[in-house]
Image (cartoon, one colour):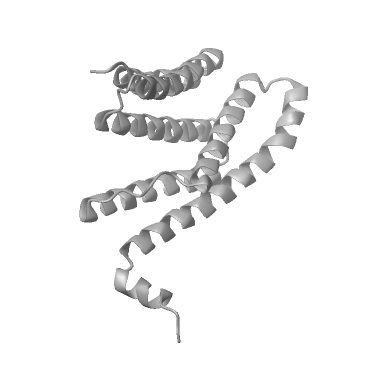
Amino acid sequence: MTLPNQLSILRIALIPVFVLLLVHDTPIYALLVFLIIGISDKLDGYIARAWRQETTLGAALDAIADKLLMVTTFVTLMILEALPFPLTILLISRDVTLSLVFGIVLFTTGRRLGASTSLGQASIFAQMCTVVLGLVFYVLGDQALLQTLQSFLLPPVFTITAILAVVSWVDYLYRVVRLFTPVEASMKRQTPVR
């Protein structure tokens, strides 16, 4: 097994450790484990590309680790009241439906949707910012200054994250619909009228 795949498996194994540390009121250690998970995510991708060790298994493990981390972190922070319930449900619904749709497309057509769009990447970036800020404010949020900063900073971040999630969700679903649009029908629409 390649080193990038081993790092992905390590990330998956560290997710329950992160949750247990967070729930059992050792948030500083939970934050450290979260940082280790994030660093290993970047490291496994870099090693896979630099050492030419990209594999189908590695891509699957990387995607599973990413989804597990995001969903688990959102749910845990929601339970700890560090993130709002509606935002958490929206983001989990988006991930679950997109994963199901992509799986159905792959199973029925054998085709994968292309690389993630800029909207999708922006949505993932916003989700990561939301998770990191929610986690940091949960860990360090007892101080009055941080509570003020939290009330000022988090609502706009939550709003931007929700908007990007919905827009990228619609964009991905539109791409799936276009994938199933018959070629002949799309060619007729593109044929100029003379």
